Image 1: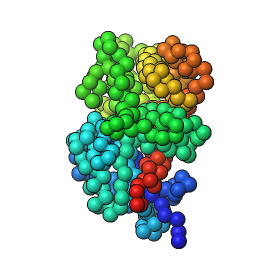
Image 2: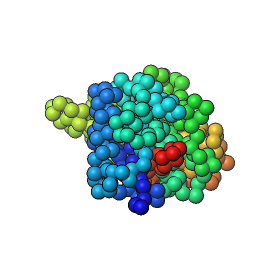
Image 3: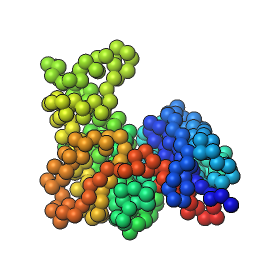
Image 4: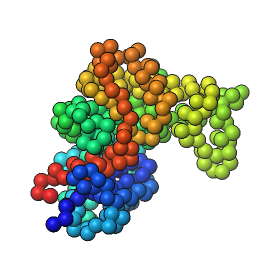
Length: 328
């Protein structure tokens, strides 16, 4: 009999990524589509479509699929598979995601925090192999976190552990976060907030010293913002002092957050994942600032790494979690 497989789904604020995965971590087929932000109903329909298209892309018999795992942002009730609240997904309050997907796909479904899924993927198949104590920070539209201690994902008493993007790192004039609070790590390093900070910096730059003014103006003429987070890092590398200041502030915010996590959990490795984490300048700056905030003993043997699985981390972790569904 052919090996049975699982489908892993990574639900993000920008895209839904799905993959058909073997027990050895091989991705047989993928599908990625934009995340509909109009309603939870539209989002769930898109998840179903992405899962079905990933199975088609794999070329396998759909009957080989034994279960589905979904990594989703926001505050969850993992035991019931309910998304209680997701700041970066419009209208996602108390959404019974597991039951709706299980009904439509006619398969067992496990729902877990997206960053926990990515952390599990890295421990099993990526840069975290051999490191039973690992913390992962996903730097995308928002900021998520995954905790693995003694090789097991830490979900907490109510399944809410891992909301690392909402630890407060700023008390003086804190910036607003999408969660409704102020001073959260996400408000300083999440891509959505970074774009806002870039435009604020350009608005304050009345002498138009920054290299990004022309790109911003061109984008506005075309009916779009025109600026991406990657532009901030590129401009800083090219000598743009204003963008270099923003990069420093972003790296310092991350260094503060990471130092807090080191003092609380003492992991052997911290992994940065997501689009924002790909900037080499950011990683170098974090390493530069970290000794300012963390006690020496906590960083002397620490490995600060970038995800080696890239966009597959969440898919692989969710698929692996689905393999553990009882009776699947």
